[in-house]
Length: 188
Image 1 (cartoon, rainbow, N blue to C red):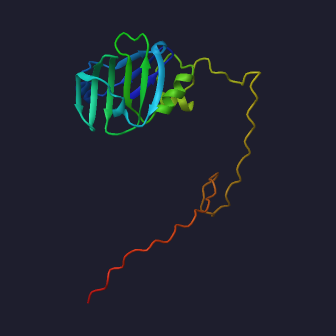
Image 2: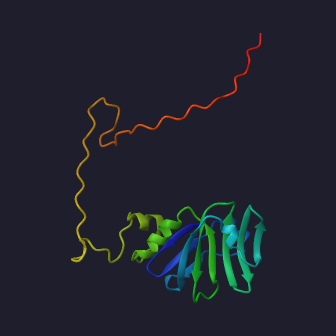
Image 3: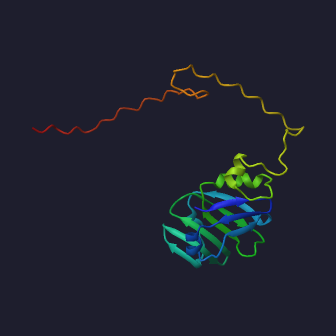
């Protein structure tokens, strides 16, 4: 799958050598942030393909990579199998009107686009989870925002109880209903 890098000015879709070869694309896809109009999470990227590949590689249901041209514009596509993904609608991009790609990190991409990213490119998952410090991130909550209540410490497990320090207690699962299974007669 592709790697998505985001900074304060652009989204970079980093392609592997195989993806570049199959997509007939020389380098990574660079998308200025101000050209991103909409990002949608999708379950089946195949239903979002429009037009024909030109140039590109397509094996229906298996792989679709490259440039897709239609009367609605030019799309860049990186789709494998039936995995979830995102559709990124663009306005004013010099090359593409839309990008369709598989990624497990679609929600992280949407969250990262809402964050004021720093000057250095960072992975969208790291930005969305707050693992990377961002430019302009406030140290303290704004005056009009209420402070989050402090969380109480969870009681630590007694030594030898089988749980690590700070581990959550296990909850009982509901019993599975009994099902009748065919019994094979014993042979002598």
